[in-house]
Amino acid sequence: MEIIQIVGFGLVAAFLALVLKEQKANFAFLITLMVGAGIFLFLIDKIGQVIAMLQRLAINANVNMIYVETLLKIIGIAYIAEFGAQITRDAGQGAIASKIELGGKILIIVMAIPILTVIIETVLTLIPK
Amino acid sequence: MGLDVNAVFQIAGLGIIVAMLHTVLKMIGKEDYAHWVTLLGFVVALFMVITLLDDLFQKVKGVFLFQN
Image (cartoon, rainbow over all chains, first blue to last red; front, side, top):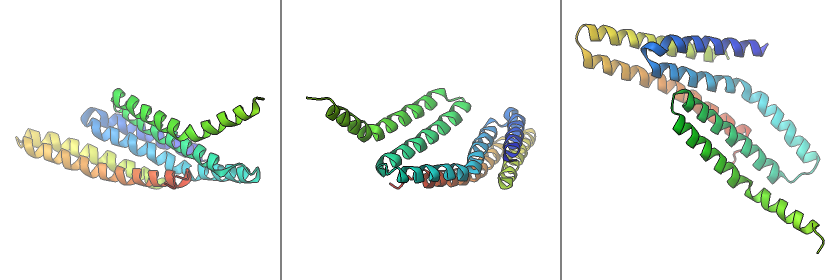
């Protein structure tokens, strides 16, 4: 089963990172970065299937594709920002991690602006004059 | 999946070798060579990680419809 592969891979990498932490901390950091990317690469095609199914649902329910696309982009931005923030926090740089998270939040809000405007307009039209 | 395990072991081995070389070179008095060896080892490992990260970000872009 894949989960055993993932857990085994993570444990091996954690052990190697510990071994390397005393002599050369920067190599340990590289190992954690490599494992983070490796495990997600392993999951990316499964996530792709889920997203393809979501898109088919959206098309069948003839939802406007722009909203679904911005939603998926927001998920992508959230994931990458969280990945970067966790890695930098793990390397001991809390300040940089919080800046990355701030950047991610602002980019997401900027992408959500068109959706918010549409929602507000529809709500206004619902209110009887 | 197996490929990544090899890559992790390569980086770990590289780190250990560089650490040993560093101490050995420091012992025989060649301090500056030691720092060069560490730097080079780090650059090689960084290059391996960067190629994997580039692959990851390309895949993420492909999956999450980043067409822009």
